[in-house]
Length: 424
Image (cartoon, rainbow, N blue to C red; front, top):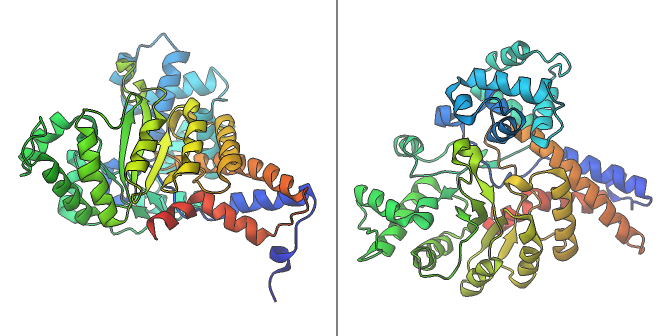
């Protein structure tokens, strides 16, 4: 007989809330659709451990605001351990760690069974020192209840390129490649010079066979990586179509490769690069973009799927409306500066109300392996809160729910919708 708990209609709000929270917190995440993580074979490119966690660029920005006695250049002159000690003292001891990035560190330590109240950095560091990278990957994925993660793989990065060329395709099935193509669409003049050096007939002015050769380059790397999408991070002032090389490259290289391979193109738009260069990786900002550019891409290429996230909070409503008009547009995640519970809740409510369940609620954007734990723990709880309200709304009309139906909905929002888009 079927499990009665899964088939019995849910009635009172308390029952709905309990079921939704349990499902959201316990369901294995099918896939984290965008991270900056790597599998073990990439060596030091995979960041993990206490000192990496505490020197994450979000916390670099926070400590430079909280403790102005040390300038950014002084902080960066320190060793990684010295930076971690300084950040811990400034952001966790001298202030209460209530920002989202600081709370995230505490959530991770707690998940490992470490004593948060002891504030003992030696204890925390010993915990990570007593494990191997392979053991730690298994531990983190299990603790976060994540089955697969999508990497960000950049063939223009010399260290990463060497791994792909020497070791071939990814062998750990938990790590899915995504081909990152920022240099091609953002700085074609520089990319063309590198492509020339690799044997492709490309020119900074896009002359000759440049577009066809760029497509050949993308095809070559798709053969090598088997990516699940092509991705690019674009500035807030990106516009399509335009007189810049990005337009013919998108139309005649990127989109045709995506369509041939049956994979989406994933533009992530809204960054303002290096608004404060002194902060390094922490120095980027956010700006509103032209959502019309997304609409025009979707309209010009109706057979290509677009997986889109935008960085500005002010762009989210317009993106939802665009997704109602274009079935080849799938919004995903709460990216970067939007990855805070209050904004995740607002965006998830807005998306549910406009799109139903036709989006991907979240991605972690992790750069540090351990962040998978807190980013998904916090997001799952926020998503559960929204869904509880929405399921209660329809229950009040007389519509009854089962846990099986809720689980199906949640799986789609936590990555199942993306897997259906790519046919996996």
